[in-house]
Image (cartoon, rainbow, N blue to C red):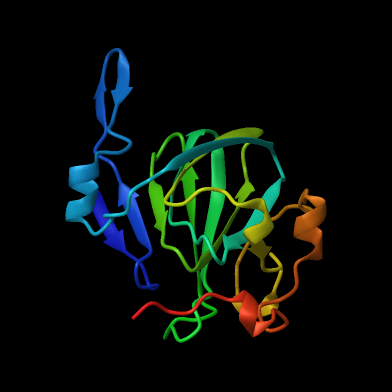
Length: 186
């Protein structure tokens, strides 16, 4: 496994070692000891899988009182995945990182607590997996507008994305009340 640090502290791009032969391919999608050696030491308590069709954009989501670290990957299909540092006091506050995750490259992104996360579906459909460090808490769900110009996200859109009703209502980072943003952990 190869782990790359990104421009945002704590955000890691993980490239598993893939074994190919005549039958197909194999790789470890998670192994606690190996991931801990690379700084991912959290206890994952919930796995989620979402299915989405082409053009769907989910995000940018986060939880405040029950912050979730996420190890995200694609089981089938391809997405453009994005994480945004929204931790008050962080040197990289408001900065974003985007990359392609697919069933061909098998890359994973570790998104620490305190980041907003989202993705845009590039393939006809996608099966997307999230390993989470805290439980989903519906009344603790927040978000940032996916199209906030201050975030400088270069979404590879070909048309207006498909959004959930709640994702259409999120405001920019600048317009988010300060009490709705996480603080940088010491």
